[in-house]
Image (cartoon, rainbow, N blue to C red; front, top):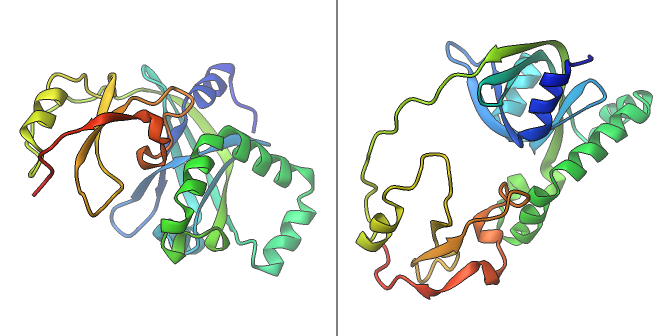
Amino acid sequence: MKLTSEAGAILGRASIGMLALRSGRLPLVNPAVYSYAQGSLWMTTSRYAAKTIIARRDPRAAFLVDGGARAVLLRGALEVSDPLNVSNDVRALLDGPAYFLGLAGYALRNAPFFAGYALDLMRLPREWMPYNRVILRLRVSDADLVEGAPFPPAQAARVPSVPAEVSRRLAGVARGRAGSRVACLSSDRRSGRWREVRSPSRRQAGSRVRARPARWLWNRTIASGPR
């Protein structure tokens, strides 16, 4: 499906959208990194994920990408392609270059996410290992530009066990912006200490914090860790 130039620009700028599937009385809504190519939206997930099970039962789906004042709403049928399923592989081959070009575009566009995934590979549960991943392809049948919904005012809330120094440093940080630093738990579960981490660059913004190289970590660890 051919998109308008404005819709294409929004899809090109954003890195994450919201996938919605029918699930009983309420929809299942999940964030997902994506790529739009060959008239389809491409994603991956675990074969054991709830959205995989739901999509196989009812493929009707929608995907919303927020561009600020305007958002793109895509609707269509969500196909689940399992590389370990012979019939799925045959269908991919019959689809021709479009299938493989779509996957290549997804991999290139989301390279920082794949880098973080690779660094965390040894710590992932079995369900999220590469051999248990499937491909999601939303065959877009309808696309709309809609008015972006403004964020409601942020409400203050205290997070239990956050050290006082961390709370002071995070106070006043603009909602939705990382600022120059973010707080996170050390990946060393034995220490359980809070660390200050430099804000990632725009290119790396989607990567997991704990996948960040050691040079990103400030050399001063806040002494009082969470109880």
